[in-house]
Image 1 (cartoon, rainbow over the protein chains, first blue to last red):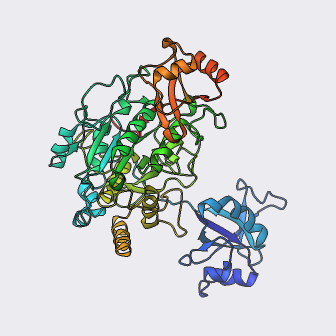
Image 2: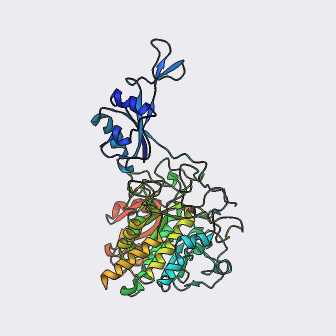
Length: 453
Length: 84
């Protein structure tokens, strides 16, 4: 997190900072502050001290006549820096105690004209995403998803629509697809909706993957009419996927599962601490089956969610830490969203996660003109789109790197390590480890292959 | 009647029928459409949906039963602004 640090160094130094003819660096003022990475590009700034115009006035009240003193004995100096997100509360408490010249530490929020939000037009198109994901380079490496099972757990896929917009045939593996009881429609023939968008976006970098259609969100067991299912439907879907995985030869196992859904409200959950709770409870049966499948070699990706502070989905009802349950599981990749300019979209949920703190893991591209699943002018948006975009890259990698050669855990680490970091101190709760970097992934795989040869 | 999610440890290869016999459950107490779902075969752990009364009774009678667990609705992660 970026911070502003207010210090009161010696009057001589304050005077130097205030003098525009004297060059003073951040290091001159605040070198060696523990846990702080100073921003050396930010020249220290002298800040006057507010003084009540009338004797006895409240020194902290702005609702009174004030004068401002730049006398070196009274003014202070501000520098910029960065503190790791997971150390912020400790550092902010300790800094004034360990370094007497530190007066206070303030947040230094990013101020921008606007972040991309849910109702904004598309930023770029699928060709931009393909370029950013180095799809041509992936294909040249033989990484196109061939032979890889890519399960889309969502509202079902309409293959004809995907083929029409993509301009080529796709493969829906009907035998290994699965539907909850009571859901009609054949795999690959569901109405065009959210799941079709997810399938389209996954195929951008893995055009030859075999799609497994898992329309869990079409379940109507609850009797509702909207697109939702129950978490128990997802448990049943994952039990099927484990059978799919175990039926694959051990030496060539490759199953990628993309999940652009979640639970939005604590209203339907037991409170944290209750043994039946889902949001914070690694012992919930869905969180157990996630762990079991990941251990068996599946790559599981979840959307981080659209509860970002700047423009959150109106359904978001968790008061804080909105990345909950399986979306924050330590053995899944939790995917945040950036637009094709690499800037985080305002609705992308921020960490920390509830089951694992370091969520999201990284960001992938969203909010681009893609599948047209919601109309010609509607972008593929939400972390709903970012998740399958990342899943497609994972499926591309699996073409030549089954879990026997590169375990699910190793691949998660590789993707985190190669992500394009967006802060000075590594992990942050907005971007996670950064933005997915296909070029870095390709280079890492080449190094790994060379080492194994 | 409303059904809730529970887990139960059963011998490997268990079926819904064998689970119902083991837990002394009647047909109308179980979501047969949902069935018996293997959660973690390595731990012989299964999930099923039963009535709230059956959940309380089996949890009291059988230490290998856990729950009820939350079974919240799950929804697509669409941002707001999406036309219905």
